[in-house]
Length: 367
Ligand SMILES: Cc1cc2nc3c(=O)[nH]c(=O)nc-3n(C[C@H](O)[C@H](O)[C@H](O)COP(=O)(O)OP(=O)(O)OC[C@H]3O[C@@H](n4cnc5c(N)ncnc54)[C@H](O)[C@@H]3O)c2cc1C
Image (tube, rainbow, N blue to C red; front, top):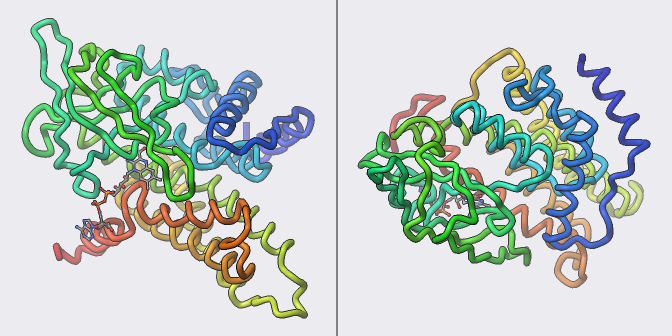
């Protein structure tokens, strides 16, 4: 199916199958709505396009997934941040899990039957991810015993499984990834509240958690490469629908601000539009590279820098054009403004992205 046909058919289907969310905008409701949307889209086949047959996908280019995400975001059917997890975790499973495990598990995620989480960051290891200390020790029977702590694990309290990085030996080559069932004895999840007032992420404590050997992703020591393959997705492909969402917010701002002949600051609006347009162009190029079979790498740090810049600029503009609204009223703009501050942190901070651009793209050497 070509992209234009896919989009037209999808639009027709969405027009006749109402998946609009209810009025409850709590995280519980958002997660439930996401599951509802995925279930419906998977059942009708839309959520299976762009994924390989090995995980019960219907094939076609990955760009079909981007088109689907764009339609979902533009219609406000699912919160774009939590919708992104599929784009980050499913490709990793396809590349690193045993084919039978990927075939069993990926449809559960795509089909809205399960939510998963990503257990990378630790209290002492964020930007310096390679210093992580959560230990995995092999047992004689082939299973592994994992002990340690993760932090900032998004949606861990809702997750059935976790893509978990552990240490099995010293150094980068001593990091090993597992796909862990979150209901395994020894796992405790403690939600943490963000400054926008939502328990979006959590601390995850692992106390002698037994993980079957066949849940290893790749081989012992492949964890660093897995992270290097996963993070470019977190820094690029999932942005296409986020950008679509940000355009809807810009349109909403235009509706709320007075007409052009009043005191509206059209320069600020124009700059916000330009920043969004810039990241959309970049994201388009990334989607095209992916469609041509390219492998995503450090160049996706440019996408991440542009996205974070555009998102923060947009909500700074909201704050400036609606004086007092963010500060003094109960408005969704406030939580969106506050959450936009996280854009320069999650998926790797703005400073780290600039270091990657300097060292790995511009070859400027170490600081
Ligand atoms: C909303 C949100 C959701 C998240 N979800 C997840 C998740 O699901 N799973 C997960 O594993 N993690 C998640 N994270 C964690 C995120 O990946 C880390 O916060 C991020 O990598 C930064 O690590 P840190 O918080 O330990 O900060 P640090 O690494 O301690 O950094 C602190 C400051 O120092 C700066 N800094 C550090 N090193 C350098 C350097 N070499 N050069 C210049 N500046 C430097 C950083 O830029 C930053 O400003 C999430 C974070 C947020 C905000």
